Image 1 (cartoon, rainbow, N blue to C red):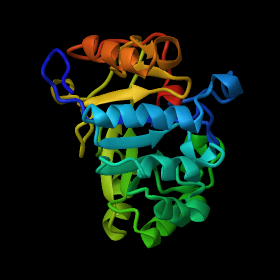
Image 2 (image 1 turned 90 degrees about the vertical axis):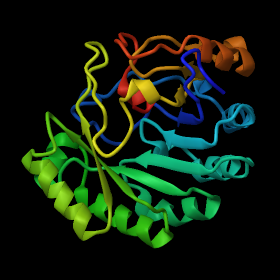
Image 3 (image 1 turned 45 degrees about the vertical axis):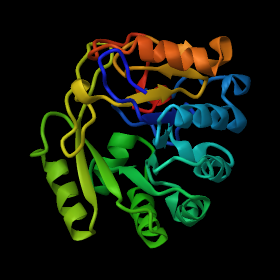
Image 4 (image 1 turned 180 degrees about the vertical axis):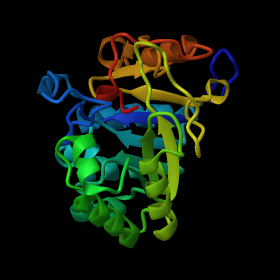
Length: 266
């Protein structure tokens, strides 16, 4: 499927929860957030129905995000349901890695292809400072488990203030080289001020070739991360919501006053 700027849309990012076990300084306030009500969160059946429809329209790349997707109860079952949909060539997940030690192999067995793991420093004290709650050794164990499970290539998402030359980023790069991991540098973004840039080591942030739609955990189809445009599948139906998102996908991002990273998956 194509948007009105003739960009081929084949990538669907699915936020399965607004909950997270960390409180990263650039993503969430220390006290947490007002969580969505359980009944507002899409069921696995609703998500799977949406994915099936999107795949029939040409989507072949799906990424599961959060919040932190591994805190969603029975997430392995959802991965299995999505993996069984014919036509998906790339099924990935973005995670902070804390629970991968236990779940990497079950996720791989369910059909997950690969993972991106968030890691902004390799220093335990700095990691705890950035995440407020995190214990970095659990991330290292999760990375090792993902490697053993064959969830490759494993990409590390490293958030930086200004550049990849920052001390923490340099150390993360060394860690990646020593452990056969791919690194992507993501400059800190600000939705309300419209501050974003292209991912170093990836294509995110390049509006001219944007190929994605986003599904939030409460059923909003969002055509752009830096826009408050959204169409709810429960209110409009899957067909109308997707068609409306395609029709209204902007040429480039601007600002998003009503959205937050923790509930749209970045």
